[in-house]
Length: 146
Image 1 (cartoon, one colour):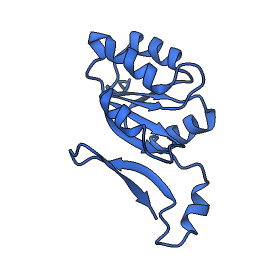
Image 2 (cartoon, rainbow, N blue to C red; image 1 turned 90 degrees about the vertical axis):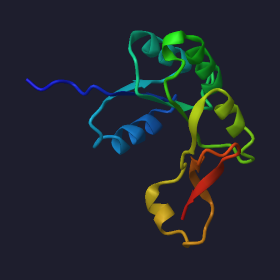
Image 3 (cartoon, rainbow, N blue to C red; image 1 turned 120 degrees about the horizontal axis):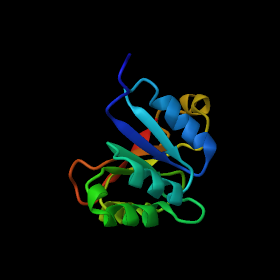
Image 4 (cartoon, rainbow, N blue to C red; image 1 turned 45 degrees about the vertical axis):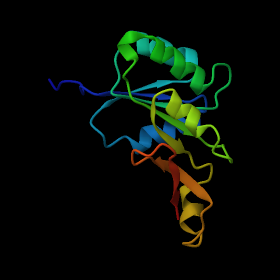
């Protein structure tokens, strides 16, 4: 009888299609994927088990990702759980620092367009940023997928 994976990842996003996309992206990773569709659901998950990392949407209805992260950090057992913030919309990048202030380890820009259309864009198009490269710097710069 095989043992379940020792690593659990919590995916928190109120948009079901984003959850499905993340599950597909992580399908090849030997881990247990747990999903929550709200900040409150995420808090219940964190109370029930420990996670290797939490992928947390910033803009959710009700309790947003920053409020959720603050409550996760308030619990001693989950203070050091890595949190990667995700957003599909933050044109100014002003909220990135808020994520890092709350102990986030990364701030990822989700792509709102189908991957097929991205591949057709010109190589020099900086329109889709999908991640943040911190490199230990105080002010991270977005990575651009071209």
